[in-house]
Amino acid sequence: MSLYASSSDSYWKERQQTTSRSPLQIASIVLLALVAVVASILYIQSTRNSSNLNLSQRRTFHHTTELHWEECESRVNSRQECTVICQPERNSIQRKTMHQACLHGCQQSLVASAVLGCRGKVEEGRGKERKELMEEDVFQDVGVLAYNHCSKFQGMDPKPDVFATCRKYHRAGTKQGFRLGIDAMKSVLDEEWEGLKGMKSEP
Image (cartoon, rainbow, N blue to C red; front, side, top):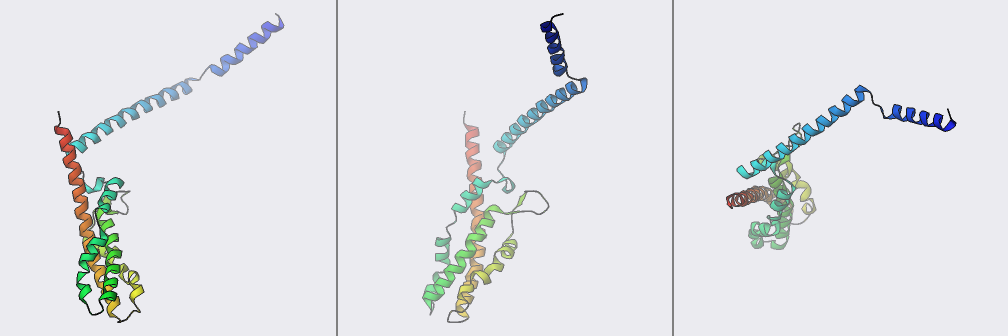
């Protein structure tokens, strides 16, 4: 046998060894392929079910997304709302100082409570599921910050009236902001649902 023939035989024997697979390897490959196919089928089915759900019923608060929250928050105008709320303080004896304290306390709390009204809060121990808050929940989260939010007025004359005014309207802003957030989210979801029903009714 020639040197070249010997080298050729050796090459093909080594190639056969490297390309041959054990039954266990083949079974593993087949199993992985089946898992991939099943996963794909389940994903497609879940996507179809989700789509059908969106078209057949109004979205609930628990299924809102970042887009819904941003749209909801954009509909709450804290400056406009607090201007109305603080209108009585324009007629107070120390109207400029009292009005400034009112606007500050109101806007600080109204923005924060509107966000909670729009977004709710992630429940502890339940993954990322959100719950719609009650007014008392918002006062626990935002109302307790009144002292810190209004601290700049604590030493301002007439004491303690200015500080008390800021805290008073901080509470009013908390209540109003939460209500506005809830109403805004309801409008966002209602409009989405009406749009989906309109699409569904089209031929």
